[in-house]
Amino acid sequence: MTSDAKLDSLLEPGERLIWSGRPNADDYAIAKSTASFPFGLLTLVIALIWITTSNQSGVQQLFGFLILTVGLGLVLSPLWSFFRGSRVTYLLTDRRAVIATSGFYPRCTSVALSEMNVVKIELSVKGFGDVIFRESFVPVPDGGNALVRDGFIATAEATRVALLLRSEIDKLSRGGAAQP
Image 1 (spheres, one colour):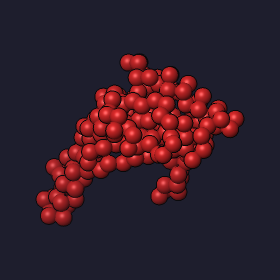
Image 2: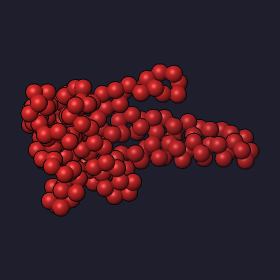
Image 3: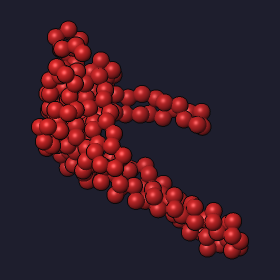
Image 4: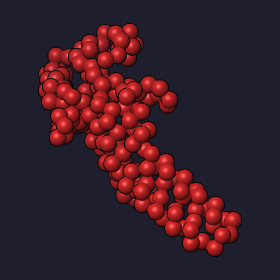
């Protein structure tokens, strides 16, 4: 858990903290890199084939090393995700859910309870789980759409947090929660 001063700095005036927690960094890394790692392995194989079979011209070799660099970055994404996961703090308040990441490239995502269109629990075998509270589709360059999900990933208290979250959303819908 982070210090009370750190938590207080993330709260808005008059906001009440319901729950705070941190993800399990191992499970967080797995959840955040399930797509990038296998794609990175494939990219590495392609790069190595490209480099070893190209006719040694400078441009072709340079292109092969560029692909190799991208592949290495993707293969190392679980390490980056582990590093990030060890610096994430989750907050649930009477107004919103906050995902705050400190360290390199700090980031703070805040989702108002009124913007939450789903509350889903996805439990893992190890007992950790994800509490998903917002899903939306965003356009991607190929003309399709990609699903974007916000939530508390790899938390040990997923079931409890989902119940707290649903309770706060119910209070808001009945007009019982504090308004900003």
